[in-house]
Image 1 (cartoon, rainbow, N blue to C red):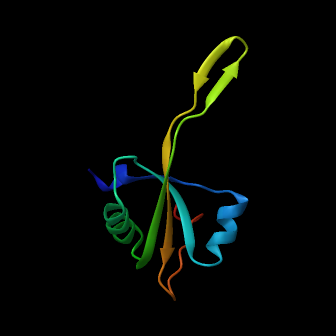
Image 2 (spheres, rainbow, N blue to C red):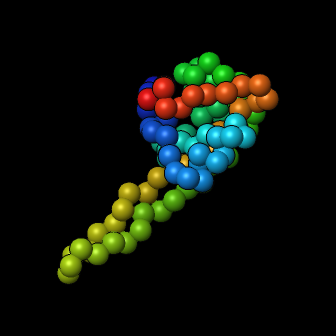
Amino acid sequence: MHLTEVIKKPLLTEKTYAGQQNGAYTFIVDRKVNKTQIKKTFEEIFQVKVKTVRTMNYDGKEKRMGKYVGKTNAYKKAIIVLKDGESLDILSDL
């Protein structure tokens, strides 16, 4: 899998902004990748050292639009914690 396919986009919410104060950054990643692939890719793209990677899988939710029923997309979320002394300005890298 190519580097640009592993990390899809950052997840920017109030909770993730609070985590950035402690060096934890949250990204939506490809559902097929594992923690070691996420760590290698993140270190190679952003030139920082990663301490830990935590991942969560989310299933799509059923949504209604009138009489029609559909599903939202399933996704995988990764919380990447950087080593002490490392930082990442996420808004300038987008």
